[in-house]
Length: 400
Image (cartoon, rainbow, N blue to C red; front, side, top):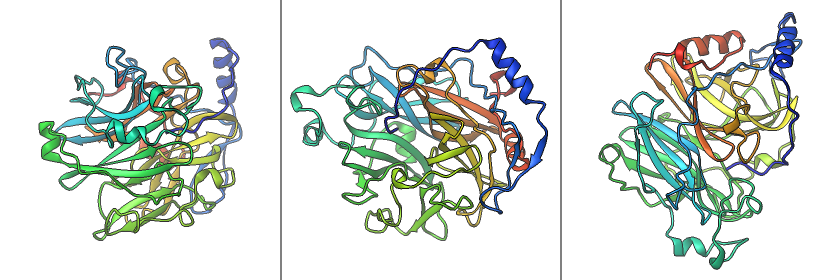
């Protein structure tokens, strides 16, 4: 779930002016600079050149289903895993009642989703239980309200799922929102055989964060370290050379970090790191590559505030708290119409997979649509390591 940001109208700029500005900036000489941390390698330019991100030309890949009451208003912020050669997408869906549920779609090539179920595959609570949480509405007025709930328009339920496959189980972490004073992280899991057969035999959901702690957007690594789950809870707490991970032998809120150990990101001071001054949280769970753990994250651009953008980190394989490389520029910015449909300036990339040598990044645009961007894995990693402008490519450049 994305917290409400003040909406600002953006002046229209002609395509010719943009081309001239970019061409002008390309003349800037490349220089090496040290970041806040000496261990993080970044090459920056005197004049910043935004990443020229290319999305799938058929975006959005999934839109709200207006004839379906549980996903008629918005579909966004999906989690993703690869199993049996298919990409399985678990996305947040909102209907007219404003309750967040999890929908499902799948694809053979990672681009064209030829399977989309007409019913939600996971609901953490039944309607009667959920009604008991209403903080700003009443049981007589369960509605999708973008004014009262500017962050997605929903007032309760499970939000922003992230998915990982560990062994023979798929774990789904998500935010449980029961009003602005009740934001917690929870999880559930399902056997991969049940996933294959579309038998939605989820375990009863359990909380990962404690009562009274305001927590969101924790992600699991897709494998254990020395037999322990690795739970990434903070991207930056003042030291830009590392991320913060809790290693726990079981997924239990009494074993995971407290608010003191894992501060709410909204209470942390801003500071400049690479292209951003406000670091938010992990976007998708980390992806394992031979060069390190590839982690996408959300942050606010210091030169373009009030818009959600996506950056990339490469973490050490053996010591994943250590950051090896960081993208010098955003790898994805909210510039397309479907990223500004009702909530302007939002790309929320909560799902990522590696398939057939490509990175596929799935994201919610404008808190309303689902889209995909992608890159060739080897090229992306090499540009990230060399400090180059790592970008996502056009469909014509990728064999799917």
